[in-house]
Length: 162
Image 1: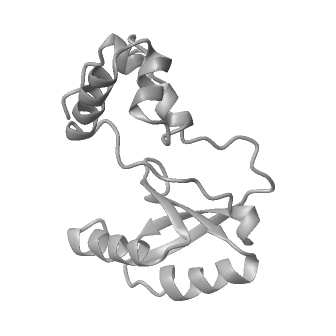
Image 2: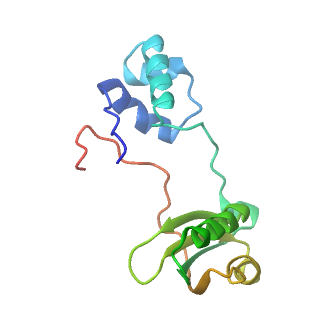
């Protein structure tokens, strides 16, 4: 288990702000957290160096670029050996429409989240990228009717139990 980074009071204020708008200058961040720019810069550097935050990115609205369908594809493997896991990992890393992959417990081994244009787009990916893998036994697919909530914000508090 990885060691949990202990957030200080300034970092606890900074993280929700950064998750809302990573384009803020250090000066603006300092003003918003009631601290000095030097303090904010040091805290940002520490958060980056310790892997708490990654690089700033801009979030694309998938519907605005024609990616109107969220698909969740459950995958059952024929085998759990390292070669099979590596084959699946390589395949999903090569497919840009697969935006998230989770190893899961229960009846299915993996859950893939795809953001595709339409059902034909998904069918092509399923047939050519997933089901062609020798290690895949079968799949089950769920099509999202609508995104109700989607966020990239991770809850941040001094109480790690919440």
